[in-house]
Image (cartoon, rainbow, N blue to C red; front, side, top):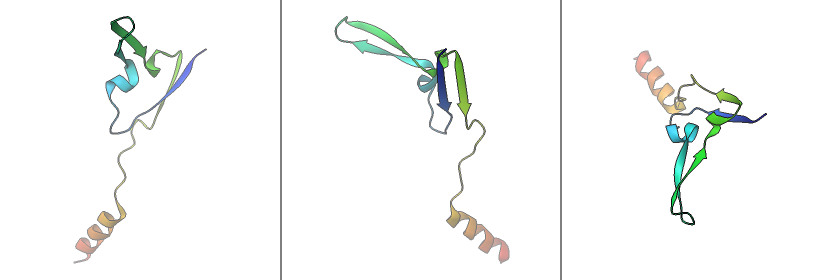
Length: 67
């Protein structure tokens, strides 16, 4: 049984999940390299996780609200 993990971040591309066609010099054609989606079991990690806010922005927001 094959297992793969996909970490969903803000910069993930469809080719990171599905795979991509790569040019093969030896054959002169395209060769498909399957991504993690083609495993029998796929773990999707951090799907709904938003980007963290910087501590500096939090301090500025508190300072602004205090005024």
